[in-house]
Amino acid sequence: MATFDIVISGGTVATASDTFVCDIGIRDGVVVALGLDLAQDAKQVLDATGKYVLPGGIDSHVHISQPSGDGIVMADDFESGTRSALFGGNTTIMPFCLQERGKSIRQSLIEYHALANGTCYTDVSFHLIICEPTPEVLGQDLPALFNDGYTSFKVFMTYENLRLTDPELLQTFDVARDLGATVMVHCENEDAIKFLIGKHEAANDLRPGAHARTRPVAVEREATHRAMAFAEVVGTPIVIVHVSNGQAIDEIAAARRRGVAVTAETCPQYLVLTAEDLEGMDWEGAKFVCSPPPRGTEDQAACWRGLQDGTFELFSSDHCPFVYDSVEGKLNPKGAKQFKHIPNGIPGVETRLPILFSEGVMKGRIDINRFVALTATNHAKTYGLYPRKGTIAVGSDADIVIWDPKVTAPIRHANLHDGADYSPYEGLEITGWPVTVVLRGKVMVQDRALQGTKGDGTYLGR
Ligand code: DUC
Ligand code: ZN
Ligand code: ZN
Image 1: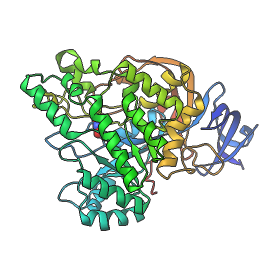
Image 2: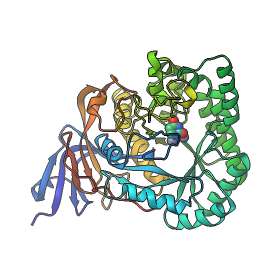
Image 3: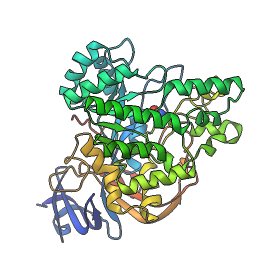
């Protein structure tokens, strides 16, 4: 009888700390051996000679099937979102269950689980979004939910229907500290944005490009500073998500020097898109509307430095897809006339890893170990999935991706698997694509062809 269900042989294995050539023996969905010449003892051999063998990507910032209001519908459900994630080299994604007004978070969770159940191609684990931190939510719901494994939640300082006031932020941070929960903070100053939107409306500047001009760097820098000051006052660690620019990075570095426990995240849109992209002809700029908006080339460079010097531990997609040419998407009746009604968010769960691999590893900006840390290991550590997820080690889930660093092909939405009708990265030349993806010992994608079935992904309690 064979010792291993699968052996991945001859590849260059990289973790967040080491790079080595070896075989990986997998049994019952788990890595059981790292060694040499294991292949003769396997039921199935995946030859990875000349290729990288990496832990499956973990995208800890993904919006899927999130209620968006006003007739707007997200382009991805769990089936299309996780299929797209899988083809992009991910084996776990972490979407958000939104607290809906007038509904208990428990009820929202039951409904969100029902959407995910039996439809996923990757493993999933949910964060919560808290937008109404009432005494009951803070005193009873969050502690009970924490005990049930919902240990992280996102709060917003912008969006009229989501934002928390300063007292609410402080109270929510306080509860997170007592529980040991992880709070992710979206940092933009809503009042300043509203003020600038009013100015642009008065000047009849309503095109998509105005989205970036009404959310300038100062708006994000101030909110980043304030969130970290509150974390310092309360004495709780926080995660600053989707950091877009050098001034916010400087704030994070200064807070760290004061001893504030801050984890920081950036995303592909801040490396390869700019505010110029929002100025496209015929309302095409709507395809790039997300918050914070992409900035300029100097801020791109600052984000690269942050990835290199350790300011950023997390590189996520903030995948938040809407169909462009749809009344339920970017070109909804109001959004087609005025930037402030264009739904915020862009697709990117499938292109996150290829962009960082190609622009980062292949262009010599970061090494392969940093790539693994930024895209898998640090996500597992930050959100309580490590060492089951996020590394290749004996005893860890066999979530493994084989990368071919020799394949060069541009991003074409026609070749992606999400539910949107475009990619903001269309035409970007990529060297290095994931070719084979193994989820808990099951070959889900082999040589870029789907082998797995929906429902192979499972929910991960934490
Ligand atoms: N901004 C968010 O805060 N979330 C989803 C997408 C976006 O653009
Ligand atoms: Zn956000
Ligand atoms: Zn987000």
